[in-house]
Amino acid sequence: MSFNDWDVLSLEDTCFKITDGSHFSPKGVREGYPMLTVKDMRDYGFDYSSCKKISKDDFDKMISNDCVPIKNDVLVAKDGSYLKHIFTVRENRQEAVLSSIAIFRPNTKIINSDYLKYFIINPVTKKMISENYVSGSAIPRIVLKDFKKIKIKVPSLEEQQAIARLLSTLDEKIEVNKQINKNLENMAQEIFKKWFVDFEFPNEEGEPYKSSGGKMVESELGLIPVGWEVVQLKDIANITMGQSPKGSSYNEDGIGEVFYQGRTDFTQRYPNRRLFTTEPKRMANKGDILMSVRAPVGDLNIANEICCIGRGLSAINSKNENNSFLFYGLMKLKNTFDVYNGEGTIFGSINKNDLKSVKVIRPFRGYVREFEKIVSQFDKEYLILDSESRNLMKLRDTILPKLMSGEIRVPSEN
Image (cartoon, rainbow, N blue to C red; front, side, top):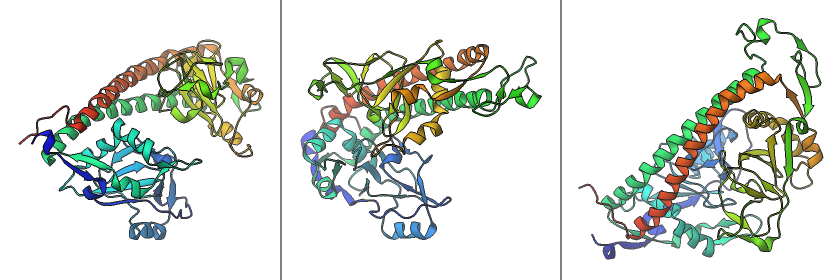
């Protein structure tokens, strides 16, 4: 089949159904079935860590209303962070979705599910949709009727499968790297918790301190090992609050300094470049911890280059070059920061003085250095794998438009 023989169809012609999740959000329960929104979506599936749960009766209603995705469905973020996450459902699961997620149910005799997914992921498609089909000012969204009329070039199923296999190989390696990094972070968090929350760091005999009878004293944060201190965050960290440049200085063309206004461009650890500014004000250095100080307070990333930060962020670094200890310590302050998420009139926020005054435990320096020695190696490995994944994403995003247009052909396996 030559490129000129590719069919051009509307998405509606390639799918049995293009719909979305429930427009009604049932009451949450402690134990039940996941009820997922666009906020729970990630690049390769859902994050269930903080999702809502619903009762069996409400879940049965979700099934009858066709708000439960099935294997081979393609799920698309359509409200708010539209098109940020798009993935294929790999297996039937007992979970429902809300209306912020679109459900594409492909006719697999016409279109391969992953080929459809990559068509939507394609930067060319995203740009076209953003320029023509996004509506709403407060919460930007894409309406289903507009999705249905989008045109797609469709080669033979064999060639679709070959294209999907090639792109999936890259994505699978990216996902493996993400899982390794997740494990590295989990190990670091576990060591931090054991040493600096449970106080089971190794004593002079190599035994866990607290359970081996280590001396504890009262403090305003509860019992802590004797000789440790409760101090303010400003005593162990340098803190820079962001300041936004003029809006007229923003651009997406790479002119000026990389600019992060808030947490919008945060990923699992390092932010994605999107905006630049020609009039930077407050800067963060490579390796600084970026913390969201507005809606919500406390989300963290790490700057992997010098960048300008807007009023939604602060840049934090250790006064003693113990950034790994500081990063995992800030993670453990989630409950502290959550208090500020409910205090703003519209959006939660924390000001400079309150942030500087947050109470933290300062251990003996030797234990911090030992933790830093162990965990900084995890963090270095994390950065290597993350950089590899970013390069693979660039490769994928470079060849994807060429594959989807027929400029690059992939031999099908016959």
